[in-house]
Structure formats: structure tokens, C-alpha cells
Length: 455
Image 1 (cartoon, rainbow, N blue to C red):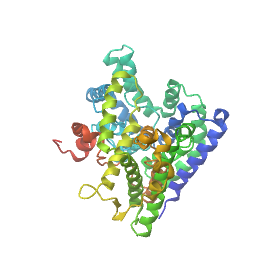
Image 2 (image 1 turned 30 degrees about the vertical axis):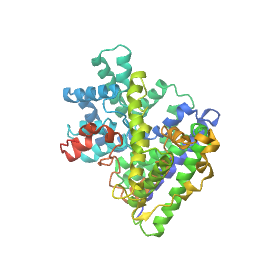
Image 3 (image 1 turned 90 degrees about the vertical axis):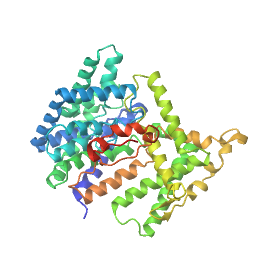
Image 4 (image 1 turned 60 degrees about the horizontal axis):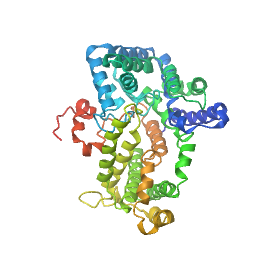
């Protein structure tokens, strides 16, 4: 069956998000510089509601935060902040949905392994800063700012730990602070969260009392709102003004629609997990297919973006903590897509679940098939690649986030007492194909399998 309380969380969060923004945004507009953060205003008030509904959860969070001052954990936080600053792990997803190297879920999982906290609360903490988005804070920001401002490393670690404590003990207040620091101006963050809390609280209570895992309660209402003011936003519109970029988005979506129906008709989508796997695989395959049209391979892209990252660190030491996050997503999508479209035994031969994919929405797309109309006609060999590089910074509709958010809600509605995030799996990060040594630092290896690897 489907848990109604979970669907209610999703639907009412999106509606509240839209209506609040429509009412409080200046000129009913979200400025591009402010739009990435609109998915980060939901988890903070939800956490504070959960703290009140379950005082033991609040006590567990306080115990978690108090541990940051223990010498061993303080040293861990300092080491990881330094590694973030220097680009030690290469490009990372700082707010990853999994426990990858250099990610906040990975760091928090390592800390939680060193203290005694009830399993349910441990899971909720990890869920709240993975698919749940407890504030917009990216680990390492305060450390980097302090070091670059001339502070000592000790002072920088102090600043980092202070912010990490704040984001768990006072998430709403911390989100307001973070937005002030980035000079957010499209609307009043405090007013948004005040109104959002009032709107979502009855549904949070109903889900909590209905036995939905508190970790899932932090995830479902946050991940689903991104279309309003972010995926559908001025920044996306500006990017999609380019005909080829829009054609990529249009055709990848067409491939998804056509092949999901094909898999459904073939009887392959027997559960919601298979729907999720199929949907993300189809869009990955379509993206890799377009890359291949211009003679580029996935290793070429990984090599390019990883090398660029190290020079970027040197040029911009105070870069945003999430600067390369979507580059990582983009590379991961391409790597997965390559595995699907490559011929056997290397890949799946263009099949998912044994069904051959239909790429006609790409091959019949006039714009994509006529790149010569968008450059010097006799040398039109890099047009599609150049538009893919635009999407490397904003691949949310290639991954595709609206689809995964919706399917994840249905998975939670079917298995409400099982926390969905972060999955304790190996992502097979694309960056690790080039920098294999970072696999030895991933929480999946250190904390899940606990197996020493040599490659």
C-alpha cells in the first residue's frame, strides 16, 4: 500500500513553497544568484518540529554536536576541512546524496561511528544532510574563509566547528545567517521558514504519528520543491535560450518518456525501485549518446574536468564549497550512461533490463542533427559538446531530479519505516576512475564494507 501521510508531505510542501514564494518574493521573482538555495528552507524548520515531537532525537543531536569538541573528532573535522580547502580528493559532491569521499554525509557518518547514538537517530541525522537539506551550509566554508583571512589553522577549525554546531542546534537561525552571508535578497528567508513551518507542521506530525521514519520526514518535503524557483527559473531559462542546449534537454526527456513506456509495456517495471533505476539509467544513456555524437568519450570529459578543478583551486582558493558539485553529478551521469550504451562485454549494448533503448528523440531532433546551423558550417564538430558543457554546471534535468524526487516519494510511501537516504552503496564515482586512490578514503570502504582495497 501507499502511505497517504508521505504523499501529503510531498504535495503540501510543493504547494506551500509555491504559494509562500509567490507572496513574499520581491516582484514575484527569484534572482538567479538566489535560486539554488530554494530547496534548503524546508529541512531546517522540519528538524525543529521533530526536535519538539521527539525530545530524545534532540538529545541525540546534542550528543552528536558535543562530540565535535572531543580531540579525536576535532582532529577529524580539521583534517577533512583542510582536505576540502586543498582539493585533496579532487572534485567532490560536498552535499552528496551518498557517503562519498569528501561529502558531508560521509564526514557525519565517520563521526557517528565514534559515538553511541540510537540507530534511528543516527539515520535521521544522515538523512537530514543528504537528500534532506539541513541549511545551505557547505562543509569547509568557514575554515577556508578563516585561513584566507589570515587566521591560524586552529582558529579556522574553531570557526568550522562553531558553524557545524549551529546548523544542527539552530537550523532555522543558521540558514538565515548563511543567506545573509551570501547576500540573498529575493525574499526574507526567516519569513519564508516561519510561514513554511506553519503550513507543513500538521503533515509532519501526521507522518511522525503514522510511523514514517523521521529521516524520511526530513527528506520528502525538501527534495521535491526544486522545480519551483530553481529548475524552472531565470537561470534555467537563460541557459536554455541556446537552441542546442534546449534541444538536449528536450530530447533527453523524450528518450526518457519513450523508453519508460517501452519498459512498462515489456513488463520490466515491477516495483518502484526498478522504475527509479530505469529512469536514471535512460537519461544517463541519452546524455552519453549525445556526447558520443561529437566524437568525445567519457574518460576525456573526466580528465578535462578533474584537471581543470586543480587549476581552479589554485586560481580561486575561496571558491564556493559546492562549486564543482554539479560537475561531479554530470561526470557520474556520463559514466553510467557509457556503461549502458557501450557494446558488450564492456557495456549493456544500449539495453536496460534487457530492453533495447530507442534514441529516436535524439536522432530525429532537427537542431541536434544539424549542428552546422549553429557554427561555422564546415567545422561543426564541437557544437553539441559545447552545449553539454553548459549543462555540466546545471545537469538537474538530465539526472533527472524532478523524476527521482517523485519516484523517491513513492518508494518512501511504500516503505515508510525504512530510511531512504543516504544509500550505503558505492556510487562508483566518475572522479575515482581517474583518481582511484580516493576510494580508500570513502566512507563506503571505511565504514560500510570495512575492506582494505589496493585500487
